[in-house]
Length: 320
Ligand SMILES: [Zn+2]
Image 1 (cartoon, rainbow, N blue to C red):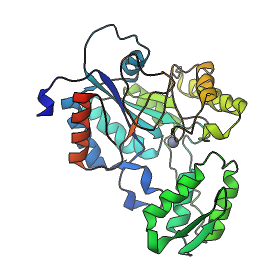
Image 2 (tube, rainbow, N blue to C red; image 1 turned 135 degrees about the vertical axis):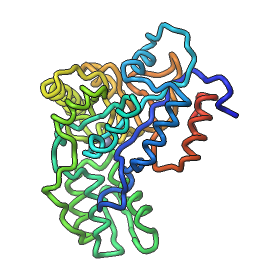
Image 3 (cartoon, rainbow, N blue to C red; image 1 turned 90 degrees about the vertical axis):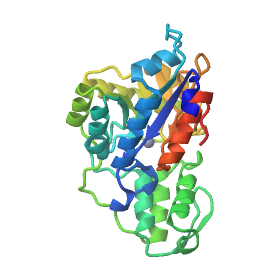
Image 4 (cartoon, rainbow, N blue to C red; image 1 turned 120 degrees about the vertical axis):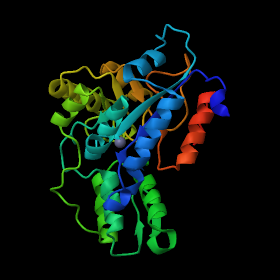
């Protein structure tokens, strides 16, 4: 019924991380957004119901440069972190639908076997030999894996990690490793797409953005280091891919993960826009280009996603 009603003028930015099955590895299940089958089904549905837009079209909308008066629900597809499955699984599916994805790469991780902090935390907890333990930094947290379950325990530990007063991530991981007695992470498994793959994706119609150089939570850094993270990443993307990078996605992207100084640093480093990640939709003339809001795709069911998109298309609002 909702699909018969006129669409509201809006930009809904969907955010994915990994595409695949979280049961297939020991890393963070929370960053698996959809299986390949679900993702393919989602793109088919979105193509029929909304206007899938390119990064350039989305930027024109938030910059107020859309000349036409077309009122429609625009949807932009974005991917954070640049996991290898983005190239192996998401890219061919997007291509088959003629849809563009925007892939935000962490330039220090491109092509690497690096295990980022959220995956490292998950690996330690999934391989933990102790079922009950306590963390003390940056605040007290008692964990009982049998009582709370793996997913809830992981959520609490990652929440502790993301606090702005966690200024020593090595200390956090060291303490967690000691408390859990978990395994060392594997060092020889490539986990991130490489430059050749990124170049191929651009030739295939995809867009690349920056997700900073080292994926530090920017609000935990001083202003100079924030600017370095953003400008260094943009310079590397230019050197490796030969393109000017217009868009940035703040690591983590919550309201406390970036500040006014971060937004200024993004502008000064040459980005036209930056994407956050705390929910909501963007309306014409009402969105700051340095806080373009996004909603996460989080393995929700087919019917839930369809309801969310239908309501957004008609009302301009998205409920999480
Ligand atoms: Zn990220």
